[in-house]
View 1 (cartoon, helix red, strand yellow):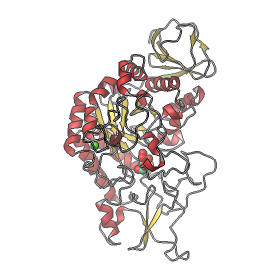
View 2: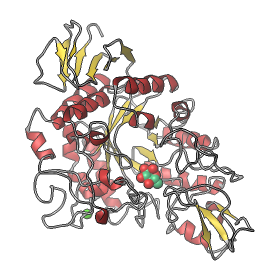
View 3: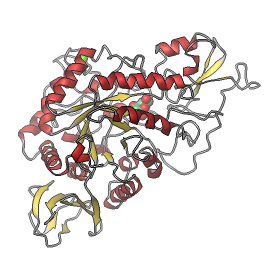
View 4: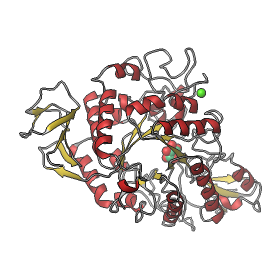
Length: 529
Ligand code: GLC
Ligand code: CA
């Protein structure tokens, strides 16, 4: 299918921008960012050159996991605004050529959701089957042991005993987030309706939370031990073979894809596919009949080196079905920001990463603050808000969720003077949007230039990519008509004699011509493209 001709795959060659709504802009002085705040930032995002916004969860929630515990799928969280605000956001973004993508959480609900309240009311309740229940294993202790060895996201048992009914319910995340039972066809019907509800309102698609979850092993077999492997392969000593990644899940996305494809322009299904195996990740694209895009975590957790990154990119492109678009990102609300994780606060490295993200084929995604190379913020223990990562020896996820640094004022331009923000500000005096907007040499202006170039050269296409020979530590590749040379070393690297037109460089002050300075990236145009 010629994506350009039918014009419907708006994410091809596009730039997405993730807004963690609570941290973007607070318009009613309660310390939390909100939907009117997103509207207030649209002009800025248009200026930056963003094509679509992924909003972190906007639905009502008791906020045990800041919106990922949904208590009503067809409404707006009162703390963030109203349905009218969301409609207005969709309309106003649309006027600026920006699409709105919502976060959809189908793996679990909040324990405050009406389905769970009913399910919990008794074994014969209407919604009992919407959740995953199991009898205790008798013989060990008074109440009986949990049915198997599955662990939740905090490391505790993934099962909580419901005293009233004497059965355990499953939660892969927090006890307040019971897992849905996708073996029940009624759950499928509920989500079809939820999806249509939002797509009918003009939402451009969904980022699907825990897309590899949904179904769980019907026999509740024990997860095997994790031997070797890293953060993407499991946790707490176990490989989640039976608690996620079930083959039946693919049929859900084929079903949703048919729904999404029924809309014009086509709506995006973008999965959070948290896994280390790129082949498995690619399987979520199906035969181009499941997810449109699957987030690439091996790329995120790659070492920041030419060979490691180029290796992941090459393997990704080889694994995807023909015609599919990869999607790249380097920061989000669950992982350390790349200006810290990859760049260690070194601006040159952060700029190089932005250049790479903006010139890879397919779809690219930035997390709010990436454009000013916002770093993680050390949030003091007593101010932390994330219950999932209580901070046993780590910063937890709050570090990457602090408010957007709009300007140098005491309120960072995030909220009113004197209001305490929900999480503390980083160093907004030295790093903020207002100052960088004034400075044509800033990282913000670099990304704006990169995105303008990206749109000019890539819009509507997944351009061909090819890695080119280069000196050690240098990643050189062709992306459509662009030739990228990225020096991932701390030394100057001689450049081959090139007469190509220089379009952009991350180090405009570096001596032109013969060498790339340390951590410098350069984009030229190849002749005859
Ligand atoms: C996803 C979200 C994360 C959340 C979890 C449970 O990984 O990105 O923030 O805690 O799912 O919904
Ligand atoms: Ca607010």
